[in-house]
Length: 318
Ligand SMILES: Cc1cc2nc3c(=O)[nH]c(=O)nc-3n(C[C@H](O)[C@H](O)[C@H](O)COP(=O)(O)O)c2cc1C
Image 1 (cartoon, rainbow, N blue to C red):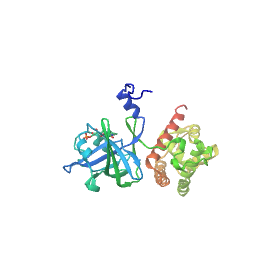
Image 2: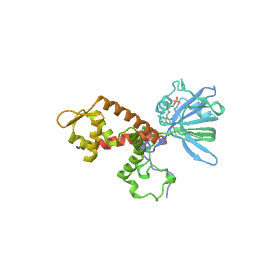
Image 3: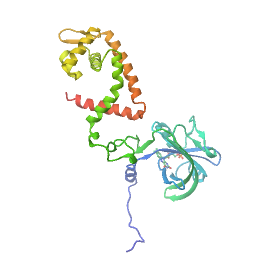
Image 4: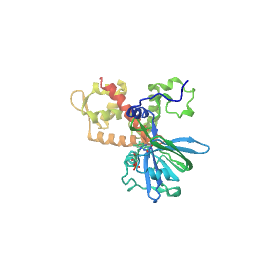
């Protein structure tokens, strides 16, 4: 077999860039000091782990970069692994040449190499090896110091920034913790929503009792507050309460002057009712903050968005 001359393969560079974009990465800003002691930095997603023993990482440096000379000669360099709220910083350091450091509050690390603020992690390196990598230079660094921060990393894929979200197929459990012990029942939305609802509502229910109210009354007040006067039949459907609970709740609300008859079968919320609802909502917000305080704020927000979508999806057909 003749393997000396590989066949000519035509590669469409744009398509190859798009195909490479299918591989999701994090985003770093790599920094060094130039020979003149001036800080250099650029956004780089070619950062990759190489070895734990010895501790090595690599990145590839575009030969056309203005800071090529500084990075290709630097004995020390550092990576600030960006957190998911640092898109602006990433864009800033991806713009060629300009004064990237400006008002950025960086701090000098080992050898004075700049470390950027509030990252997900820092890796401070000493140059280990440099390889030719075509139009890039592959620079391997030996990690001398690193810090991991409790911040979610920024993601880059398909030419866009993204955020880390747990894969639905793993129930959000880290790979090493996924086990077969989970009952398939736990994969269904209804039991998950039901259990989550019970946990979240438990704490708030105590507040409602203390406030001489209940979930049904609060639901009626919120519907009347956002819709104006509503006929009792329609109100009953919207609250999803049983008829008995609905009647009890309406009577209690009318007795406390939170709700008043508004002609025909309609009911309306009063000014006192609006004040009561505002008070209950304040309590609910505080309880919700407490119940979700150990969770990632972005994920909680994502959950809110998804649940809203789910509700709208079904209510649109009604
Ligand atoms: C998400 C992202 C990742 C990047 N990764 C790299 C990289 O790994 N290596 C590189 O040389 N340039 C990379 N770039 C481009 C450089 O950040 C950009 O060319 C920068 O302006 C170079 O700065 P300079 O010309 O001032 O040296 C990346 C840009 C973005 C937006």
